[in-house]
Image (tube, rainbow, N blue to C red; front, side):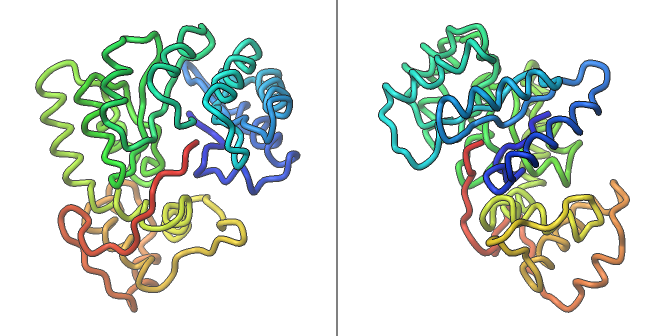
Length: 279
C-alpha cells in the first residue's frame, strides 16, 4: 500500500497531518501487508527526517521523489537519492536509475515518464527492484510496462475499481495473463481516462465522495468536480457495473441525473488531458 503519494495531497498537508497519517494508518497493517509512505521534503535533511519518522512508526519503506521546484542537476538528484538510501521519481535517465538501484534499500521503481524506451532499458537490465508504472492512459505506460515484464502499477484508479486494477497489475507469466489484461484494460479505459481528466486527485476524490467512500474534500485551491463533469464519472461507474459489484450508494447516481454524459469505448469524449503527477 502506498500512502502520501500525489493522490494523497501530501504537499497540502501540514507536517503534523503528515505524521498523523503515518501513525494512524500504520496501525492497520495485517498479515503480509507492506506500507510505504511519501517522505519527500523540500531538502535532503527534511526528507531524511520524514523517512526516520515513518520508519520509527511502523513504515516498511518510503516513496521518494526529487524535491520539487529547485531544478537540481541530474548529478545532484542522484546524490540526493543515495544520501537518503542509508536511512531508509524523478526524471532521471535509465543509466542513473540503474546505478541507484544497486543500493539494497531501493526495492520499487515507479516509472512516470512517457519514454517507453527507458522502461525497456531498465527491465532489460533486470535490476533487483520491482518496476511499476503510473496508470494514466495519457502516458500510455501500463501496456508496454506489463508486456516487457513489469511487476505492477502504482495507481489511483484502484480506489474505485480495486479488483480490476489488481488484475491489470498482475505480472504476465502465461499467455492467459496477457489475454485477461487486454480484456480488462480495454473495458476499464473510460474510467482510466476519467480519473486523469483533471489535476490529480480531483477526479478520483470527487468520484469517491459521490459514491459514498471516505475520501473527504479536495484541499483548496483545488475544487471538486460537479455537474456534468462528475456525472460523466458516475455514468462510467454504472456502465462498468462497479456500482453493483461494490455496493456504491444509489443516491449518488440519482443526484447526478441532471447532468449528461457520453461514455464511449476508449474514454472518447472525456474532457481534459490530465497527466500523472509523480509520486
